[in-house]
Amino acid sequence: MDSAKLREVQGPLKAQYREEPTSAVVTLKADGELDGTGIACRVQTATALAEAGLHPATGGDGTQLCSGDMLLEALVACAGVTLRAVATSLGLEVSGRVHAEGDLDFRGTLGVAKDAPVGFRDIRMTFDLDTSASEEEQATLLKLTERYCVVLQTLRSAPPTDVVMRANTAG
Image (cartoon, rainbow, N blue to C red):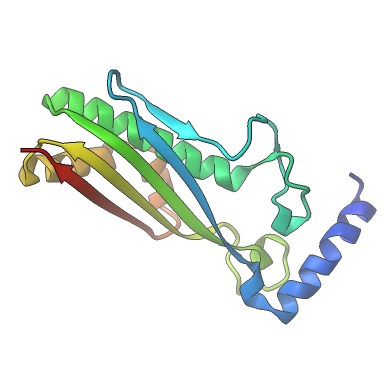
């Protein structure tokens, strides 16, 4: 795609975002499943393609992976693997899912509004766990997972990030 084609594709989006700023705000999501046998997290991706491209809100056609989605998938994968490693280290049995979603205002990315941030303005991550761990052990697991998750710690230096754990305790 050349610059003329890009302007042609993005022009109507930019105009729409100027007229309707709320239409530029899109919530992206990523989900992963903690591997019950090893230290791993299976990440559900939006597409089987391993090629990044423009998000449709910036003119892409949706056939390529969006780097915003990939960022959330990386967060889910890192947090899931870290949680499994911490749980293993603490001798805790856990399984379940990790979920992350984030809000993007595409006016910032497209240069439509100088007051609109470029990048995620909010990210939320949730652990839905099945575990027999006590509340104290769960608190330790969450604290250590947050501390040692590289992607989470990297993101925390920029966007506000909320983390929630929901656990079904056995026993």
